Length: 170
Image (cartoon, rainbow, N blue to C red):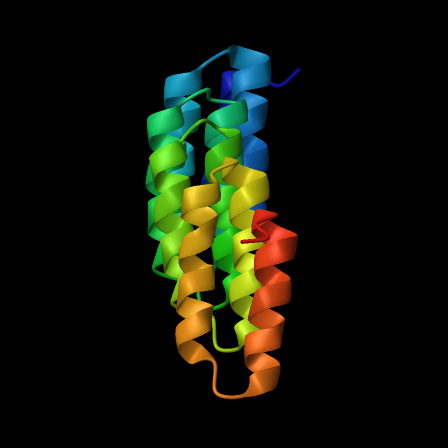
């Protein structure tokens, strides 16, 4: 168990996102000081430059500090760094885990903007269905996929996707 002085020294020497998160968790564990831990997370998150780093901060905020508002802030910040479909789906998954359904939906909408192939839209629809359990929301990327169709093969893939994702035979 670390003393406050030892944790202050550790906090001052943080250099990586992992350092900030680990020291913040230690602060909560050893001193039960969620306020200080939250401030340290904020300090570290200012330097974060990737989705993965901000996911790390969001998880720590939700789990160790038990601050959903702070976790939501980090997820929203991470959206600015998202560049791939997988990153947006990861953010949506974490948002859903912590009960931020609106943020999850926002991330999934951002993910749709990263879809380039017909198959991407169906993968996104599957993610929406599994994360949100919302068939209407899962149908939106499928509608966008139909608009992207340029060949008979694309339309066949769309039909298969509708059957697979929405279980809609009509």
